Image (cartoon, rainbow, N blue to C red; front, side, top):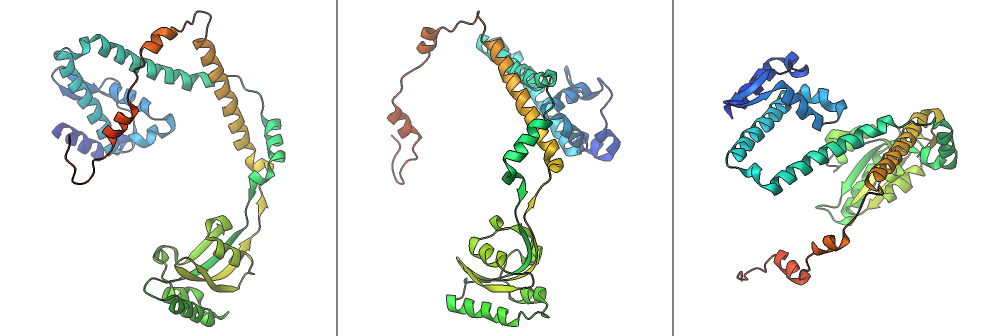
Length: 311
């Protein structure tokens, strides 16, 4: 679309324009009676959480795509009105439902801000004391890893190569250089074979069991896993650590506050929906339900067999 391409170029040429709101009501795209203004763009941004809106404004591509969406929808909606599609009573009801859905979500987002919350510090302390395992970081290890793959080798050949690595891995040997010469690790170019502060759960069990039982400086291996042998030099270990309460306090308090406000919001929504005036017409609702042949539905959605002719 030429108009949108022009808009994209305009935004790319001016970083200040991309990062700051346009003046209120300034026309951005026009086509006869159809126009898109800066106010439309501000309204479109309401779709995104408030904290990421600055990021959206800073991207010329995203701004252009937003404007293209607004403009295309407005042009096509105008055509729909011209042929009377908006006059259908059910279409009008559906548009009303869409409007109500959006307003309801706005209410769900705004109501929690009005809820008065207590100080959850004591509650956070209780959670911390009762579930210290949750706040305990596992032991971690730093190491360099060499992988000898069975691909293109027999098990015996791979094991012999792994044993060759172990034999060469003397204390004064440059293990990183050894890894570069021997490893079949496809990620070696990116990682250099390094395990940076990995926990046991992050590794295959045979490797984790072997290296976490070893001392720093030890060369461990060959360790056999499915499809490979491994040789690992353990460099250092970090002991398991219980995070102090002050380190996790803010997170716990925030979680408890959110839980409290969410429950309060759900409770208030329930009060609004379930009043003495609420009446449910069960017979009328039951009349909406249509019995269908489930087997026929399953057959209709089942992919045809190869070579079969459609009926």
